[in-house]
Structure formats: structure tokens, C-alpha cells
Length: 631
Image (cartoon, rainbow, N blue to C red; front, side):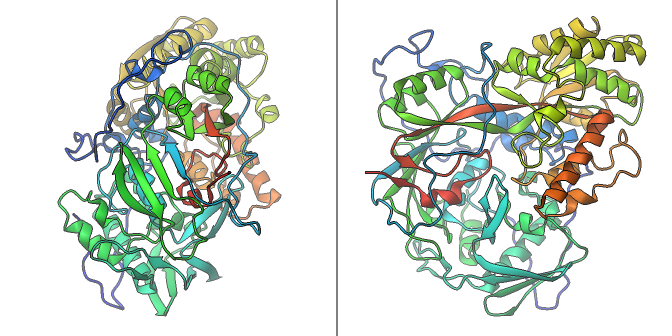
């Protein structure tokens, strides 16, 4: 385990640095750790059940794509290099239940943030109390360590996201709006100083050998100093996004319950950093205990200040009990169970699950037909995309990339590749409706028209005008976890050959190979090639930082293009309009070589009588405390 060096008051802080250049993906291809699975889920004996759609076999009993170690393919946060980041994450999601091969169906509606039975943050009416709520996790479990500052696994957030707190939390993931957590209030006296005032009620929950106590400002200072040390070492998983701490200059506690952070330069996204997915604050005693544990996976060492305490596993599910005291309203139910997503239809019918995410339309149809649940459409957290080097031939001509965009009409792609379970994506994907370009605006640009035939005719004209046929054979690399799961190599190349001419050829490669090729400038620089697949998971409910990271400074965009309006965290209409204007410039310039195609959709089914947070592809574990079971 990494140990932070001692720090004395007044010492200069270690400088975190960016792990790789902006387009550099991860090269780590180490095999999965031997302790990567916390336990082996206990499967119930098979019992005869009602027939499933199309056949009598449970969907989850069919062969699923091979699982990969997420850490080995985690990307560096920029979509242009995102090939490395999506592989295992999305594969774990898509292979979690049933067959991944969709049949063509009419397009589904675009997910909207709406829930007729949301769990309220607070209410004057007493909530019904008692009961057990059982959830299916979004993906299969894969644990590496319970150290919140060293893990790179979303599965670990399934535990720590409920047992731990952040300094700030996303109070509304759809608006998006930040709210307090450990910090009751904050102030920024100038652009390079942040003052945090802790909630005096926050407490560390008791655990074996640890009686529990109040959270202090010294705890927070030690936590942040350790984060900077780990960032300096460059050894942490890229999912931690320690590069976001690069502007931290000094951290100290000027008074009890107060933390002061000074920055080397203004950072409009610093509050977002403190509310990040992996930005969970740990007790110093818990860190020491985890460092002394060989595997780092002892449930007794999970000590947090969140609304739940981890009670280990029971019948293959993670079990959480309400934590005593603390700074949040008391939890209204008795236990929360979170299990792996297998055999979803049967388990939901048998009351073994109260909430599931379906990524196979046949599972969705079966649960929908039973009439036991409320249904909420949702987006996945990744965007299907391509990247190519627009700074050199052959991709440095915007007409060429616009022709590619027009040839792969998003509505046709969503229907033929994903059975209608996807929505056209612009530079800001549709999961961010407050910032994304509307369908009507996107329809003005190549590849987004409802009239697919007209899109195809215009794309062919652009292709020929830019001498696209003279490029000869063009190779498209598809990730091996993406194809044959969706038969993308035949669908995508088939559409391109039909629209632009018979010169596109598929190749199936690993995400590691594609990632290395992105870093080496393989997709361009005289080579007619690009890749097609899942980008990295979207890092935040607020899209502005990711939008800047993805497009600012790309060689294919107009010189001098300023992303200043995207750097303000003002949620006013004026600033959102500025982001809209920037996106239109990006689209008109052929995307600068980072081409978004579609964002996939799925469904969340919640049993009637169980209230919960509005579904989101981002982390909502802290909102589980407001769930309840209606009598």
C-alpha cells in the first residue's frame, strides 16, 4: 500500500501532475488481481419458470462476452484517447444480463429525468418506516481495495459510496446542482482560495476496534494531503482523476471545523472535484488499518461517515444497515441489499429484487409485461464515438470528416446497430439535456437529419468533392469487446460502403491496441484509418469540464477558439447558451477529429411501492438514504 510521507505545518505541498499527455491513454495491461472478487455469489438451484420471450431459457444463462479487468483498460479522461477507458467498464455492464445482440425495434423515447415516486431529500410528513430494499447493481462486482483513494473499481463505490461521505455532493444530478455533505457551507473570498466549514454533526461510524468519533478539520486536511501525495506518485488508477488536484497549492486548518485551500491558479471546477465519484473522505484510523491489511478488502476496515455501515455479504449480496447518528436524516428502512445483475427477470418476479437495470430489450419486455414495476428510461454513461488525427492528412480536411459524419446517420445507426436503444449524440451528449444541442439544432448538420436518404446523398457529394475515393482502402478498428457483441464491424462498414463507396474494411482489435494507436497518432498522419467504439465513462453530471478536455486545442478546430464560456460554473441561460454556441462551431469544423455518434439507453424498473432517487447513469449511492417502502 502507498504510505503518505509525514507533513509538517508550513511545508510546501507536493505537486500533483497529470499522469499522461492529454491524448495519452493508459498502457497498464496487468492481469486481474487474485483478490479481485470479494466473494462468489451463491446461486439458487434452477427452478422451472414461465417462458421467456422467444425461448424458455433465462436470458442470463446465455453465453456472455468475456470479462476484462477494468484497471487494465481505463482511459485518461479524454475521449480522443478514450479507447482505453471504456472496454471493461461497458463490457461488464452489457454482459451483466442476457444477450447483448439486439434485434431491430422502433426507436425508444429519449430518457428524461422524471420519477413519479422519487425519494425526497426532506419532508414534513413522516416517511413509512421499516422493510428491506433489494437492488441489482449496474454491473458485475470486481473489487481491488476498500481504500477509497487507491481503488479504480466502480464496484468499490457500490460499497463506499453508501458508507462514506464527500466534502460536497451532487444534490441534483440532472440540474446539475452541488450541495453540502461533510461541508455545511463554503465560501470563496477570491478566485484562488476556498474556505470549507464542516457540519458540526458529522461523525465517523463505529467499527471493530474503532469507537467512532466526530469528523475534524484535521481529518480533512490529512485526507487532502494524502490525495496530493498519491497524485505525485503517479501510481493511482486514472479513474481517480488526481490530475484535477493539480492547482492545489496549500491546505491547512486555520480553526476547528474550518479547512482552507489555496490554489496556484483559478480553478472553476474545484467544487466539482471535491464532489467527484472517487472523492470519498476517509478517517485516518481507517487508512492505517487498510494499509496494514494485505488485501485491503477486510469489510471490518470500512469506516465512513455516510448514511450506512457495511455489514458484509449475505446470500451473495452486499448488505448495508443504517449508520447511527451523523449529519443526515435517519434512514427509514431496515436494510439495503445490493446484488449482482444476473437472472433479473426471475428474481424480480420472485420478489428477490426491487430495482433492476435492463440492457436487453427482452428482459425489459418481460418485466414490463408483469406489471409489477414503474419504468424509467435512462442513459448509459458512455458515448459511442470515433477519433482520428485531424492535424494531418487525410483527416485534416473538415469536408472529409463531415462526410463520414453524414454517412453514418445517427438515427439509422441507433436502429440498425442498437435496435433503437440509442439517441444521437452531439459534442455534449444527451444525458446532459441542459447543455446538449437539441435534436432540432443537430438536424441542421451532417448525420443528424431525420431524412436519412438526403443525409446520404449530401455525404456522398462531400466525399467526392474532397477526393475521398482517392484515399483507397480505409480501415476501421473495432474493439473486441464491442464486436461481435453488436456486430458493429458488419453494420458500420456496411453503411459506409453503401453511402460513400466500397472502400471501408473492418478490423477487430483489443482496446489496449487501439489505445496505443491513438497515442502514437496511428489514426491519421498519412494513414486512412479510425476506430469506432465506446468512449470512457462520462466523468461528471456537469459536462463542461469534459467538453473542454475533449475539444479544446484540437488541431481540426478554428484557431483562437475560446472555451471561456464553458469554464464558468454559472448555471444561467447565458452561460449554457455559450456552451451551445461552442458545440455548433465544433460540429461545423468536422468535430476536430473526435466524432460522437450515439448514446445508448436502457431501462430502470422499480417495484411499485418502493421509492427511490431519479435514475441517473452517474453515482446516486448517497441518495439511497432517502429511499423508503410504502406500506
